[in-house]
Image (cartoon, rainbow, N blue to C red; front, side, top):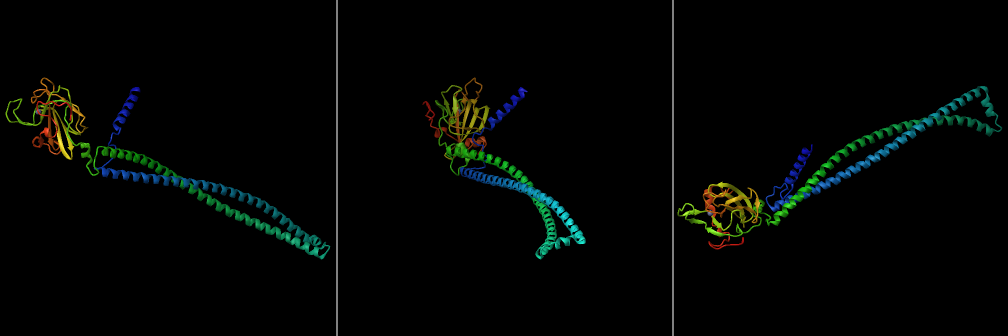
Amino acid sequence: MKKSRLLVIVFFLVLVVTMTPVIATAKSNARTLKELKNELNQLKQKQYSTNADKSATKSKINNAKTTISNNKTEIENNTKEIEDATAESEQLSVEIDEGKYKLDNLMSVYQIAKENNVYLEYIFDSKTYDELVYRSALSEQLLDYLNDSVNAWNDKIKRNDELKVKLAEKTQQLESDINTLSSDIDKWDDHLEQLDDVAISVADEINATQELINYYKSIGCGENEDLDRCASVRGDTRFIRPLNKGVITSYYGYRTSPTTGAANTFHSGTDIGGNAEGTSVYSIANGTVGMIIRKSSCGGNMVYVYHTIKGVQYTSCYMHLLTINVSVGQSVTANTVVGTVGGGRGTASYEQCSTGAHLHLSLATGWYGRTYSSYAQWKSHLVDPRSYVSIPAKGIWFYSRY
Ligand SMILES: [Zn+2]
């Protein structure tokens, strides 16, 4: 249990360490600073449109919520109106019943009265002619009034029934609208969540791209300069010495071989002695490690570094190294220790082409292993390191890298 938890923690630590962005975290296809800036602008436009979409979606959601709330209020009102109409109709039914009852009674009284002459007596019991007319009219009016009322009440019930149907239909429509809007809101909420994710990743990309731009600017890349090439140059304009101190023991060019004694042997670099085994060997300029050869029978451990100095490609080579301190593809500066001085007799890195601890420095134009790959081409591209790196003549010591 504890072990597995530890594993999980270790896993995440490794993940965090490996994922920690150094520079190139942006998903960039840009070849130049100008293209990188265009990418940044596109990302900013995407951020702008994402934010616009977000606020539009939010306002759609808010409007829908308002509509739903209004619909609910309207439904409540409808329900109340239906209840009121039902109560009114019930009341009217009662009144109709009562009215009918009164009407029936009145009619029967009227009938009976007519037969028994009571009605006539009631009418003719009048003291005056006016009263006679009045009593007669009153009786007729009463009947008419009751009849009219019952008809009016029935009409009203009918209208209430129609109103109730209309209100029920309206309520149904409102409820269906609420359902539609609710599912719309769900969809918009999902969309909003997606937009939030997009916004976060776009913001990250903007930061990473901005970081890249700052980085390339800081090393002096031009607007239209190839970024890979620029990064391998890192704004460098010159070579400096690979050691803090030393003295030339052998020049570049044709010489009598110190190991075989043969005359007119070509020496592919400048040998610098005066340093104990294990002394730091630095890259002579900023660049990228292009090749590493281990335990060559002649040259021992070798590191090749690619440079671009004032737009020209070079490869520097450090031979007879006791240790190799870099790896292929690694970016180096002129302060990076690429390895340590080796080549001494009896040491692990000793090989037949060295007579003692020293550094052999070769320099060629082009990138050996990249722009050309054969040893013959390497040889044909070799130049005298002393023409590019300020190293005093044989017998004169130097004590700095410049
Ligand atoms: Zn040498």
